[in-house]
Amino acid sequence: MHSLTEENYLKALLLLSAETGAVSVNELSKRLGTKMPTVNGMVKRLAEKKLVRYESYQPLQLTEKGKKEAGLILRKHRLTEMYLVQQMGFGWEEVHDIAEQIEHVQSPRFFEKMDELLGYPTLDPHGSPIPDQNGRMEWRQYRHLSTCTAGEIVTLTGVTTSGDEFLRFLNSRELRLGLKLKIKSVESFDGSMVVSYEKHPNETLSTVVCERLLVDPA
Amino acid sequence: MHSLTEENYLKALLLLSAETGAVSVNELSKRLGTKMPTVNGMVKRLAEKKLVRYESYQPLQLTEKGKKEAGLILRKHRLTEMYLVQQMGFGWEEVHDIAEQIEHVQSPRFFEKMDELLGYPTLDPHGSPIPDQNGRMEWRQYRHLSTCTAGEIVTLTGVTTSGDEFLRFLNSRELRLGLKLKIKSVESFDGSMVVSYEKHPNETLSTVVCERLLVDPA
DNA sequence: TTATTTTGTTAGCCTTCACTAACTATCTAA
DNA sequence: TTAGATAGTTAGTGAAGGCTAACAAAATAA
Ligand SMILES: [Mn+2]
Ligand SMILES: [Mn+2]
Ligand SMILES: [Mn+2]
Ligand SMILES: [Mn+2]
Image (cartoon, rainbow over all chains, first blue to last red; front, top):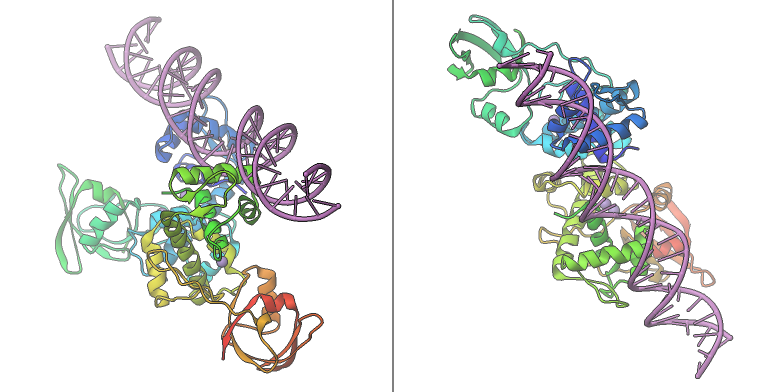
């Protein structure tokens, strides 16, 4: 259907358009690690295929068709990540790069099988929603740990980065999804937090870390 | 390392060179479904990379390096097929096309995990040997069912085609690897055979079928 | 041995997806 | 309101991997 490259563009557009729905060529270029003129050319091709709305000097927007295609690729990505963790025993820090490749496999049966073996999961190992068979998902209404205040007790429900260094850091502190965190204090000068959970009565988390952790009220 | 296309060329060369070790551009072209001039150009590139020995109008040969690379790709292909059948519940007729894609995934961990979960298998679901971590395998010393004579009892140990129509035909007759077949008669005029096994006391198999079935003495 | 068929090669062209250099439009800050 | 910075675009180039047309070499048949 679409090339591997086109699929990566569509997925990046979907993820970047989370809030406003509009994406600049510049953002897309940075996200993909591809120079702007290349991206410019490609989005024009995607526009010809009615996947993207493009007008000179205007922000990019996925069409309905584009959103669906992108959603279906994201579905394959996140199902794969879940499969690798649940069925194959990978750590959550190892699976993104593999899923980045397997998401392009052309075989509906393969992903249906994964879905079935996993019991039709709705979240991936990083707490992100898995789009349905129509490529649609409800975007989580985030709450970043960094917005919480001392005394609150929250559940860790997601991370905003699937980069392996960050996830390895979390592993090293035994931080994982589902944990209840008690916020003991917030340092006003740098926004860092001291939290307690399980065998960690006094763990300090920097702002950078807190901004990447998503929580729900416990 | 190498592109997906190069990998497919190497694998095709390895499989075609089974007997003689030498492959014509023409054979390779037919196997890949790619026109001869394209193949000609590509094998020259593979020769520059020291993966193939090429001289004008001479048969092609994989170098040691080429054999190893090809063997490692074939390993990934066959491990994947085995994984899909054993761990995901696919039929042996469904897995070749998926493995054709997954064999190109760049992630040693991924295939090590498969290997481990499968208990280090040595044969794929079609009875073909899985190359080791060095890309080497012992080629099976074939015996085709078509070479057997009336009265013999043999074990079905492999098929030479992983095309899905043929495998579906075998499914329809409940023929699968490991079965003991008794050869009741061989028709001299067309080479077709009547065999018995399990609940099938009188199954007639055409020459075309018999030539594609590999057996060992029971 | 010669004619014909098959196989292999060269030349030239095309699409996809990258890049750099150079230019233009828009935004921001003085 | 204008200068400079940032973002977007166009033009030109290149590698990878396809193709067809035309021709050359080798193998096969007559
Ligand atoms: Mn991911
Ligand atoms: Mn990808
Ligand atoms: Mn196969
Ligand atoms: Mn392949």
